[in-house]
Every structure is written in structure tokens, then in C-alpha cells.
Image 1 (tube, rainbow, N blue to C red):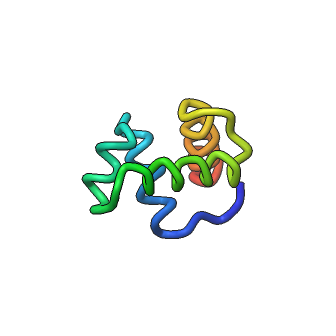
Image 2 (image 1 turned 120 degrees about the vertical axis):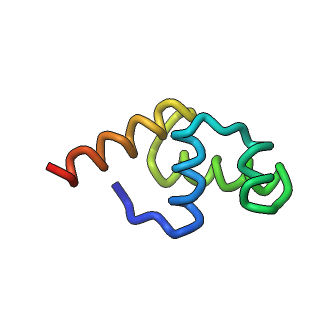
Length: 67
């Protein structure tokens, strides 16, 4: 898995918590469109096809790195 920036890590943590783009934008104090862009860039960076796939990739990586 590629290294994530602090902002990307914040967004991934919110995705794991089940947050919508609107909730991500609210939590990180930016517009919903900015949240959508960040999420889309995360998909690309993680080679994920959707939210669930991105969450799965990150959780699997975190589980492996703790072992």
C-alpha cells in the first residue's frame, strides 16, 4: 500500500467510521466537493473501486503491519 498523507489518513479513518462525503467535509472543515475529490484520489492511490474496497485495503494493510 502506498504511503498516505496525514489528510488522507484522516479521510480513511472517517471512511472506516462510515462517514459520508458531507460528514467528511464537515469534520475536516472543507466543502463537500473537496471531500469527493479527496476520496476519489484515495481510490486511485489505493487502486480501489469504491468506498468498501478502499476500507478493506486499508484495514488489511493495518492488520498485516500489526502482525
